[in-house]
Length: 266
Image (cartoon, rainbow, N blue to C red; front, side):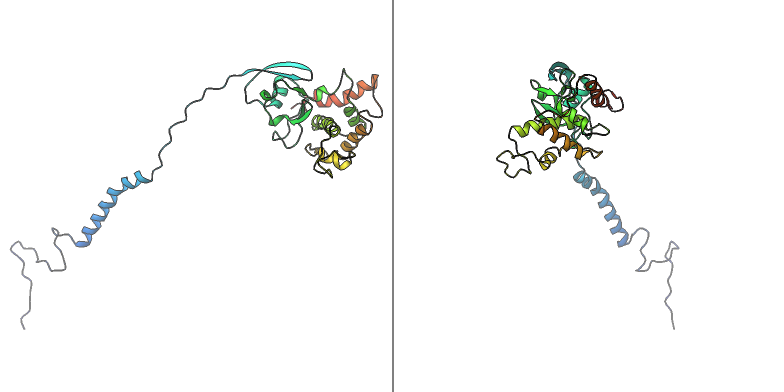
């Protein structure tokens, strides 16, 4: 039976079958792969340009605001300080006026260690700017005593042992002093039965609520309440007013640890 055989062409190469393309005729699959790769490479720059976030221009440099003179009246004395507008009252008192009695605790208005009086109203000096208090009468713990004589509240704190480490005591004293004035002026609190009228008496609950903005980490709250009550019941006077050598001794106890101790001035 005759068989079919492939005969080489004139060049000597075997003849190509229908399923095997010649090198000069690429397959359809190879053509599609090449076309898809070319399309992807060509579209990549356009896709990146559409998704790339534009770079913001650099912020212009702002000129620093130079310090300006700020006049503060603290404890009856006038201080003219060169301050930037951003300086807090607390930093102005401590770092510029040199009054280290007012303490920096949390620096967030939560502990009350920085409490001072502005026109008799107690404020957290770490939350207010010094330039906002020009023309006001600022009272710090250094100004509570008069002519070297401790105030009734200072004496009551000593007599009732109302402090331990003493770090929070400057704020406690200023806050307690303003508390009695607020009560005499008819200011109610959140525990008052009728907030429209002054409470008939300054109860321990009233004192605790009105002093709640001052934190004592040593836990001398009971003695602080007792000291405030003693001054209130005595009409602004404690039972044993210290004078002479005893006054000097007590003043050294209440002011020395609070003002002159370098460890507590930090």
